[in-house]
Image (cartoon, rainbow, N blue to C red; front, side, top):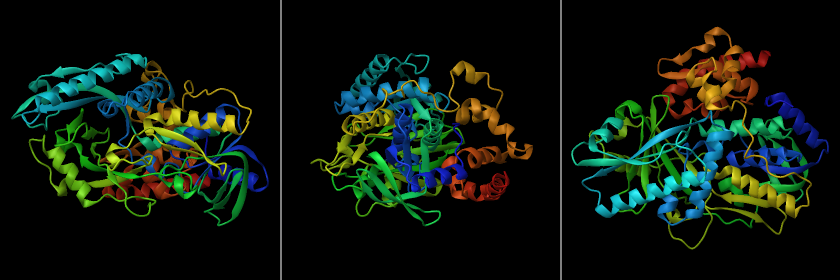
Length: 508
């Protein structure tokens, strides 16, 4: 079966389940972890249904920093195991799973007159330890260069917006940057579908059991039962709403969206120490579309868990204050184009601050027969999925092969040498890999152009999403398959093209 996700396919597969077809594994949640679980299980030969209340990547997985990182912060807290796991999973993603979606990003940690000597030494030791983990994970310098110290002139050249007065230099390291976290989720979902997994967004779980679930098709309002031999709850911060045996302390992480020009055309990321904090940083991350993201906060969530969390003005002010501590020209609140917030599904313990909670993941097989995978982070989604499926196979006596996802490329993935030969614009290759040619081939010529001078996204990308990636609404197109919705003015400018594309897709 091919990797194309369409509305008719989704509706047909949901009807099959309503008709009594049972599956080996039901996955609840289609963020990065749930999509990873679906791919892992389907690639082992299990029959899989994966349901999601909203669209693909609707929740936390589209609100990340879009980094595939090796865990500098974890090393600073002595969490070597998590840092090594992160380095290994980063290697798998950058060299096999999705090399087309990830680029090597230089990161500068500036040393200023406010930097204490012990902080400088601690940063150097931590970065060298991270470089050692890179080597241990098998990542060569061709994929990620090593770390080194820069003088003030070199640091200023890489990040022109840095304040030169009092700048003593910077530590240079490298990490992986996703072009878009939501595109990773879509790629995982398509790869799972190519192995016969049923990918079913807009199917909300009403009641979850160890042998299946009662599900509402939110497009029609109809209710059905899905029978399964095993159930994995991969709903992140919403996991405890489906089983009483999971205890989480969600935290809110906020990012600012800024014009990259205000940061001097930033092309290297900045790692900025938070004053008065140990091993806590704010990151300024250049994007490939003329924007920069600045994040992130780590604040406990109080109250009910929203479908779409909102950043607070206190979060925005905090990020601006830390960023401005190293800039020559301070930024104002009016410079912020928008802000977004995501929720981390942190495991609860006795620690007071969510910033101090471990990012380790856990697989919980509860007495009700539901297996939940919680905690963790985007970089280690594959390992989380592997552990969850291993548990389901072992505890539910399923017949399955060994995990294969270390070696499975996503649709569009290829070696750097092959990607360099693809006859398509570099920007498209960075998002679609070898499929970039197909993205253009399916679209009429007028959709090959950028939507506007400020928006590099093309109508061809929107059409591909509508025809192959199960985008059925304007929100799907602009808020998840592309990230135009992060800047309200860009979203408004793209609305006519999105409407045209949905009409074209409906005629096919």
